[in-house]
Image (tube, rainbow, N blue to C red; front, top):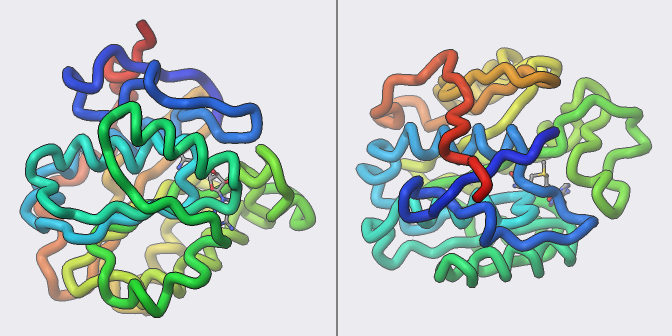
Length: 247
Ligand SMILES: C[S@@+](CC[C@H](N)C(=O)[O-])C[C@H]1O[C@@H](n2cnc3c(N)ncnc32)[C@H](O)[C@@H]1O
């Protein structure tokens, strides 16, 4: 969760343009993990397009960089897809709104704890679910603190917030639903995949990326028995810095 990756043009790259992404001191600025997630979505574009998503949702949207990127990646194919973004931070909701507007994308932005209050309404409806969680291992008491700490404080093994989301995924995802999750090696991604396997989900590592400070993975999950994995996983991709250079 470091750095300041950037890009030159939304048109060139199909992801949100950094110079159009709004900022606030209490809101997480797009960083290596955000870029890895957007790059994973780009790499998985054919899978996303074949899926023809109706409902796309991001939990913990922060600046809105990722949900905006998803909408841009789907492009004209997004048809009438409905985009929903949640964050526990009111400032993040405002910044996401500004980022979406700057790219001409519409979404419902809801300030809530993960998906609280939305589970019944969205049960079995979400076709694409994204989460770049607070994954940094920290003392447990730091989890849920307000301000920028909420962006990264993940408790023991960085798993506290992740482990709260995993049980909700099965309920939210549609039969063809895809779930993309950013993890660190310290989060024990293999164990996360085992937990999800017991819930009936297949998985793969879409992107594995070694930055100066972090060993990041973007995991993808889909229900056993559906063809959720149209794209060969890029098991050890390098950061595509050209996509994120500031102008
Ligand atoms: C690592 S940041 C990711 C931000 C953005 N998605 C990105 O990739 O750049 C994690 C985000 O999750 C939000 N968050 C943390 N705990 C949350 C919770 N319990 N419910 C909703 N959002 C939460 C934080 O406010 C922060 O915006």
